[in-house]
Image 1: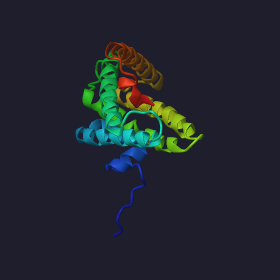
Image 2: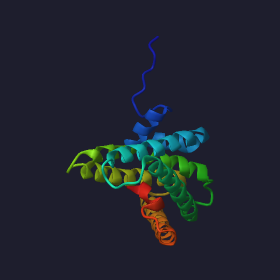
Image 3: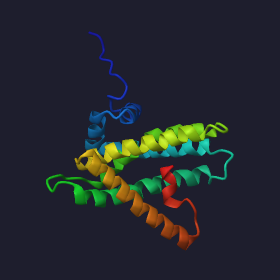
Image 4: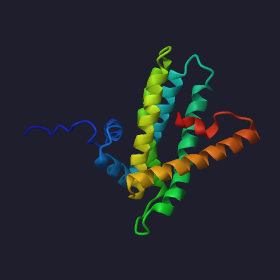
Length: 188
């Protein structure tokens, strides 16, 4: 009997899930939402994406790698919290959405940001960085759609409202503590 070979993006390994999310495979989003043990993998994706962005920013006046990873994790948690509360207003009362589900899905939505490593290319590095940012937004909307079981347009509204709240919090905290970038830095 031959071993079954699964195409990339259909398994439960970190790489399979990253490929599945990046290629917008709905069953992968569902699997991540249901797998309470995938939160560690989601954190790993956030860290990998932040490290890739840090490498891509070498030579620029960006903060150090440890700061980048820390802010990416804080940004992921804050955005997920805000999205959880806003999304709960839109979700059907019969839906049982947990913060863990939102954290996992938004964490994996960071996968396209790995392209940020290509920002190191002189003069052209901004192109893959912009592609990664747009790709991330598309994947994040799909993640919110899965988390709250809402239509895509509603998921986009949840995402935009959450981003607006995080932006205001970032500006307020940045003004109070005189820091730039802050928790919103993880977005791009």
